[in-house]
Length: 394
Image (cartoon, rainbow, N blue to C red; front, top):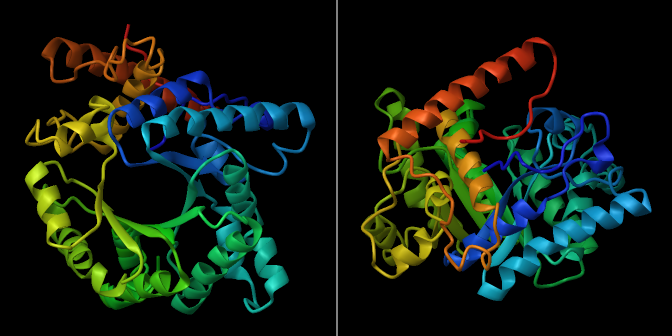
């Protein structure tokens, strides 16, 4: 989940993408709220991503090249794990490298280790950077494409990261979007063969035309490559969208079959899971190993502790459940609100200062601010400019 509140200057990337104290504060509050594994939003590694997600974190050799800015960036990144670890949480950085992944798929000879390492260099550099700054691990993503190349990419990426990062405790995960693979033509079986810490988005796999069988093959490849965990996304488990029945059915099928292929890799799922009983059943029945949440955790920074302690039956029912962009803007605004004070400054109240969007008056005010922000965003796009920041509710 992108944060959009890191330092950003379109004319000076060496000072952009550096976490502020606001970042440190809200990550600290999530840790205090009982979360076991916490992931950053997408960390940008290439020029394409920087224009798409202004205000997200940035890691790269160019930004890390001069001593003054390198020291500032590394010190700022190091503050995040220092704030999180006293509460026992694990913190990983989610790497989003667009250009280098596609350069990898364009390679004529994927067996040339030197060329492969060059294509993947930014991701490898970022993983080492995170380790040096005290992070517990990194998460990468599976992109749609030729299965044989994708399988080799999965293996090569973790191999090069392990060779560069000498810390045996450094976690590597992967994300898998099942819908995007489906669009690419990847079958379900092929999808099940990919995972380290990988993010698997079933919707993106579906978009790419990946079948369920191919998706399982991807999961199998991830498991055999030695990834520590896989995060599967791409659907809404409890609230399936009626107009996307094929996508939602596929998402469930992959979730319920993933552990058959991920025998050594931990499986997390995220996407529309809100009720505590369903979370518990999925874990107790051995379908998955854990549950991921995004937008709901910005409304309740202690929802993890509440669910584990049997204090609530579900997360809050939010007004933007069916409005992805509205939910993203609301979550970013709430993260910014939570980050205005540290855990101590908030008198150990992790939800201090967060707006309650279930209050009609607050929701009305936010919708007015959202409309104004969206208009400015469109105007900036028309002018070829970049609008940074989040919605500030006054």
